[in-house]
Amino acid sequence: MVEMSTGAFAGTIIGTIIGVAILVGFITFFIVKRLFEKQIKENPPITEKMIRVMFNQMGRKASETQIKQIMRSMQNAKDKQ
Image (cartoon, rainbow, N blue to C red):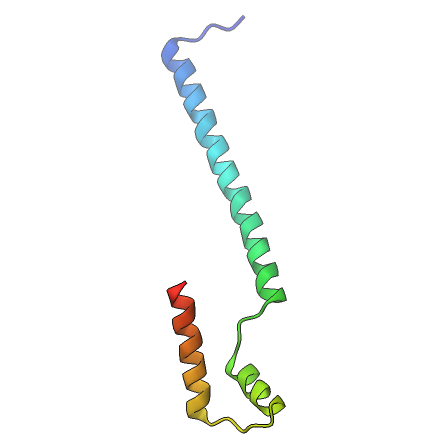
């Protein structure tokens, strides 16, 4: 049987806890990164081109001012959340 002093035992426990915490941090980072990339791929952010297409589908020709206004209002709505 191996005998350890109290300080060595405490150091081993603390080192193990820190090591596990770092490992869990890395694993969590990669899982969240993968989920975020999947979400962006499935639901891409709305672009000016998409707004132009939407206006064309409604039978309207959007001016650049209207496009910028819609983008600004969407950004403001996102910031309020």
